[in-house]
Image 1 (tube, one colour):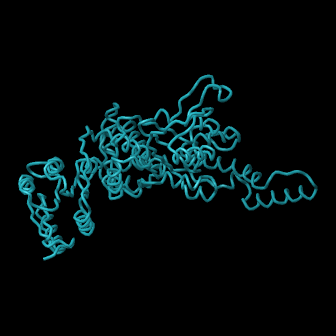
Image 2: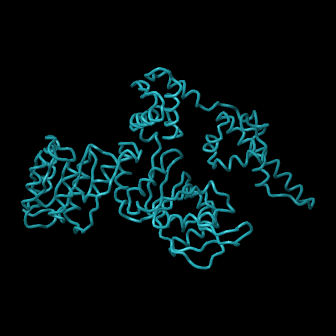
Length: 487
């Protein structure tokens, strides 16, 4: 018999899993593909086979009676470094994926898995030449990650992150506000090859436009008025580590150009400086905005987008992984208890109600909701009534735009067009229609958003797609009363 890889004899696959049904299914599927299979429920038996030189590939579970399969992986790699190992596990957490990859596994698959996916991985493992990686056992603590979720969407993220830990590839994290993009960035740093270096985070939306280049690259003494001493920038502070550029979609165009040059040339100049400085940093960027749309609007450089979007990671909104809500809620309850709040339980009906809610603020909104429940309710068990009351309190108040705006948008545009052409005919200088319409519409739009969110500026900023600092500035400039809307 000839194997699928062209061997004179079929490849021998060693399967170790304490679940008889899984052993049977794997054996039947692999035999149909032309492989020879030896299956066992014992880690000790698997070790004996490997030590005797048997097998061309190993598929092992993590939890087995005598030994953890993850602990077995580095022992196997020590005596047979070229033997490929596929780890499967029902313990489908990020740490499982990281440990499996770091200890030398060829691939990790969370249970339940698709047999077609497994067969493809087996074929690839037997066909690809084996690299010779160096194995280093880091000191990990699963609790510090706070990345919770075992949904299929999160499993895909875990597998991608595990592959990135040993690289310096630039990563772009995409996702709505409140989904946990910063946690992903922190995990990539803390368990990556630059873990011993600093992690420097900078929010592009929180820095005034005129200061952003100095903030990123630093400045020399006398570079501009007020520069009384040299200031190191975030690139310099992150040397040897990771620079996390949050809300990259809000970066001004001038700073985009300088960042692109750093990514292309690997060095930068401080503001007012003349000596290039090597940029020894890993870049991780994040945004809740649609960068492709910004490129189409001329607000974001396309060449910079491709430099940053080397490995994209999309963090799904909570409404796309509602099965993770119970675990997240339990995690936030445990955190609340650690901060001194009383422990609570959420009954099954209340949990289902929570899972059915859209939670537009994602994980951040769920965390705040759980903390309120722990702090404000005396009952030990949270029921549906408490959940409904909290969700109703957070629901926007429906109002009619005509109460504030007065006339339709079309009428506003037509009026300004008539005024513009009348002024043009009379030879009177007039500002463009776009600026005039925006100025008139912007004030009631912001007022409506504040009214709909009960004066909550953070929620209003998310509703409008603005940065909170930008919204605050507009509220001041337009003389809007934040609590009620229009003055």
